[in-house]
Image (cartoon, rainbow, N blue to C red):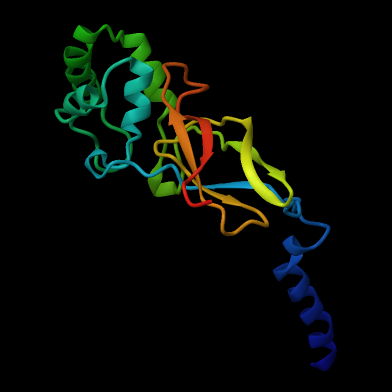
Length: 194
């Protein structure tokens, strides 16, 4: 029995902690002073049931309220994909409301497919995290350099600066009709009091 434990215990420990050492498939990069960490920015409006309405509306070139009103008459499936007839009825509702704003069926399909996701599977709509570095002079953060503006942010993400816990920064995002840049970070500024 002791021999069995001598064999099993190291094997079980290695299995439990296999992702923590060099054999891990996810490399861990040590944080560097001045690295900017973006947190959040994917919180949807409570009225939208988790849909990224601001992103969808911008991509369709309509106001959020226009898309929200159009979607209010849609009858989504509660579980799984909708039946063909329900999908067609929902599409008609959306096109009747959005077509008069210049939205075509093809564009509605493109945008809907791009932002489609399954929250019940812990998914998030298509997005790309932003990357930035703090500009540091004499040990003090004086500004920021955006390395990659990212995309898919619904709200301005919270900013943390590695090695500078007291720094308070504010991000600004921009919505565009271009799916690749929609919801990108366009500016990071120091808040007053820094």
